[in-house]
Amino acid sequence: MRKTTMFQWTCPKCGKKELVLRPIVLDADAMPEAAGDVREDRYFRVRCSACGETQDFLMHMLYADRTRRFLVALQPDEKTPLSPVPAEALREGWRLRLVRDSEDLADKVRALESAIDDRLIAVAEYLLYRKIRPAMPAGSVMGMTVFHEGDGGPEVLLPMEIAEKGYAMGKDALTAARLAELESAYGKALAEDRETGFREIGRAWAAAFVESQEK
Ligand SMILES: [Zn+2]
Image (cartoon, rainbow, N blue to C red; front, side, top):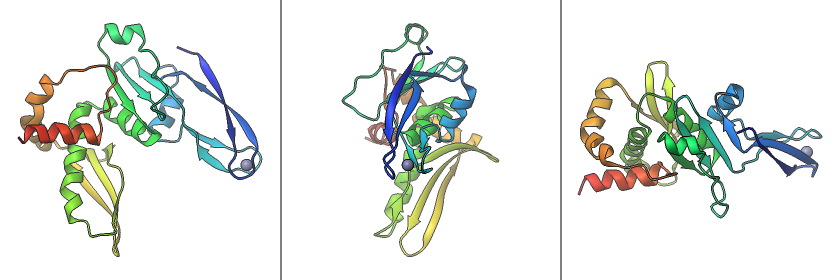
C-alpha cells in the first residue's frame, strides 16, 4: 500500500514545471500527518518553487482507514477507472465511498471518522439545504454543506451569501435528540440500504433517499 505516482504540475502563473509525488493509496494509519491535511482540505495544494503561486492539484487516490475500516476513492475524472478495492476491504466489509473533489473528500473523511452513520449525516446535510433553499432571495449563493465536530458537538453547517445581505451560516446541531429524530424517520430504511461497492453518498444520493421515504 505504499506505491506512489509521479505527476507533473505546471504553474499557471509562471509556467515552471514541478514534480508532485503522491501515494496511490493514502494509508491514514501510516501517514497521520497527510490524513490530517486531507481532513483540513489542504493535502492537494501544490506550491510553485519559483513564484510561490499555489493551486490544488487533484488526482485519483484511495484514502484508506484500517482502524475504522473505510475506503474513500477520490475520482475527479469519471473516465479514469477506479483503483481496485484491496482484498482485505472486500473481505471485511469496509464502507466504500466515492467523491469527486478534495472538499468532498475532507467532508466524507470527517463523517466516516465520527460515530454517526455517514449516510445519516448526508441526510441531515440535504435536509438543511432543502429547508434553507426556498428562503433564499434571487442572486444568493449557497456553499457546500460541511460536517464537523464543533465545540458543542457534531453539527452540519451550510455557508451562504445572501443577496444584498452578505454572509450567513445555516446550522443543524446533531444533538442526541436531533439524531434520535433522524434515526426514527430514516433508521429503518438505512438498515435496509445495502452497500454495493464504491458509492457517492452525497446530496444527490440523500435527495433520492429522503424523497423515496416521503412517497
Ligand atoms: Zn510559478
